[in-house]
Amino acid sequence: MSEPLLDVRGLGVDYRGVRALGDVSFQIRARETLGLVGESGSGKSTLARAVLRLIPASRGQVLWRGMDLLRCDGATLRSQRRELQIVFQDPVASLNPRMTVAGTLAEPLRIFERELTAVERRVRIERMLTRVGLAASMLSRYPHELSGGQCQRVAIARAMMLHPRLLVCDEPVSSLDVSIQGQIVNLLADLQGEFGTSMLFISHNLAVIRHISHRVAVIHDGNLIETASCDDLFAAPVHPYTRALLEAVLAPIPVPVPVPARVPVEVRDSDQSGREPE
Image (cartoon, one colour):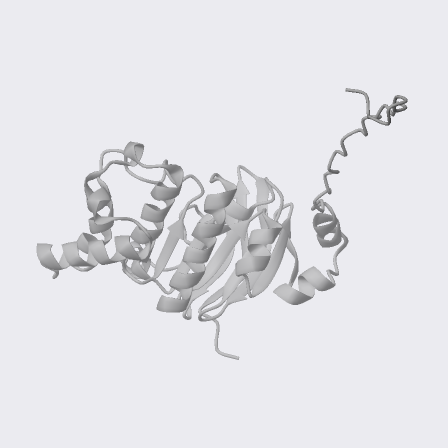
């Protein structure tokens, strides 16, 4: 097995003395997707933000390729941002309403690849926009002119502009229609295969987790209670909470097809001439 890219050890978050995240430990290797599943309020988003140091952690270590992100200074952390990107749950709120699609996608290039010319930036932006399934004609549009699915594709394109080594997806499809959810999940899987990106994919949707993950971690009340390969966890969950979580997913109930009532046919005797009455 290769060495882990991300090694989280005893990570905890407290809010005003209240423990929101227990001492969580897990690893993610290159090109691997770790699915994080749990009910609402279990600490999934808190964990995602603490790993990327978007919120302060109270204890623990977040080792990114051997470097503890919780201990490094601001300049060092900023230099690592290009390798650590996130896609948020609300696609519209995660985009600046005053920036066009072109401006949104150009921003990471202006920050981390200042040597690019305007023409080179434009080529990179159009290429990535096409890669996520959007037309170049949308570059001049603002977030309010796009659908939720289109906004999420723009957010994914922004996150992938720098070809990060780790992508954190914090329930990226929960606010989208079911038909769009499958497209976004397949897009993320394709981008992972193309760029070799590792993913921490957070969701409460077990079907989505099963489709995209190599390993699955179950979180409950701020604590990781079970981690296993995707096949093993769905086939033979160990923890009672995991079993209850899987059993709570209702199987589709077959809808009976109504059978039309049989209409009685009146049979009348023929007349003496042998003809059927008219």
